[in-house]
Image (cartoon, rainbow over all chains, first blue to last red):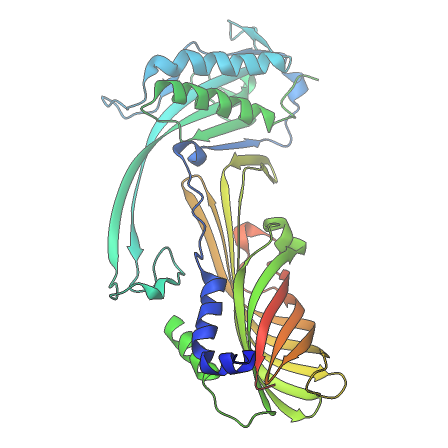
Length: 213
Length: 201
């Protein structure tokens, strides 16, 4: 029976190669991301704002779709009520009271949605796989690289909470709190509804300072 | 660049020097981020390797060079707090760390055919570190060369003319270049746990 060191000598390079391969196999993990995994909720606030001074808010009954004049977006208006109700419910849970008149309100809440198109190109370099660093050198024959172009649309909800004093009656001049929820365009209605509610609830959840006391 | 690195690796593997004076050590390397690196990715890494060439100038002292690669990644859904807000979404965090260093090792006791030999050493050189964060449809990436130090302790367990090499190394990469996502510093530190074979022992 050959001794272990003799085996090492005979198969030195092969052994080393196997060990390296063991260390680097499947360098990059496939996390199997779904469409929902691309949803992002971003919130930002004015650190000088005293939210407890805002007791009553007014919110328009419609969601503004940010599109150019004469243009349409692909975001269905069937979600408008859901968006407005979810925002109002969260604000009321924080102690804010919804009123119908600007004259009564301390703050205004504006909800807008937009459709954003992202496009670009990914270059898959020769030999070394994707993306960036890869160790797929064992692919044969040599791969000489390729460029793949992509384009996709995302729906985004924007919430703005502003002191009524910081509006000119038409537009918000200065926002005390804002939330941007990206990735809300889907062909599946039930899934979209669920994602909208989840995203809006998360925006409030990560903004604990947004309350009346 | 990568082709050059592979040429260096295979040159080290096939180098021919008198036995007893030269050790080539190939290791499977696992890792764990500590400090800020651990804050970024706290999952244990099972991916990595290192390769070393060590020349003995005295019976208990060797100098050499090493090249390695350690890879960390992690999926998290945690909310990231910002200075004036927060962001939530599925994040995939990545760290690629490539050390290229000069090494010095001191070996305790005498080299005997069947006795385990402990060693301690330090490496100094550079780390090429690429840090990446994927969030939603956005991807943030920063790559820098860092000066670094890496103290190490380990043992050599003889297996005939080869030896099993077990070691733990603390890797510290100093601040360098532009920081990632406007952080104040981009120092990195991580532990590697190495299981390898030393040839020419």
